[in-house]
Image 1 (spheres, rainbow, N blue to C red):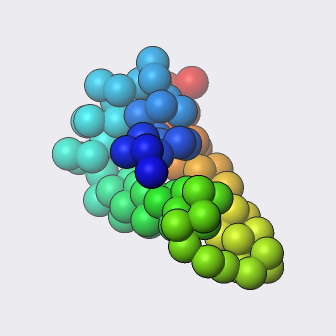
Image 2 (image 1 turned 45 degrees about the vertical axis):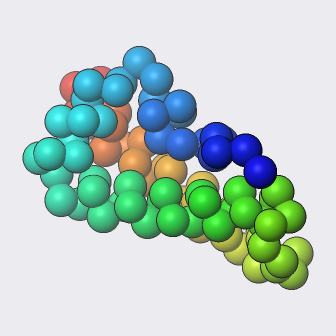
Length: 83
């Protein structure tokens, strides 16, 4: 299995790496969401790479959860950019 997990926040927000570092240091809410996102993302990756079994329903529920978390994180990043 590859060590690389797709859909990591640093990959999604490549141009905002410094901002993500600041948010991680200064924003507890961001940290909570990012930690939850990473846990769900890793679980989705394990299912997709077939190292962990899950029903189609479970996989879809996790993907929806990941997308919801990403939406919330995107809102925080966008706000922190001042956009």
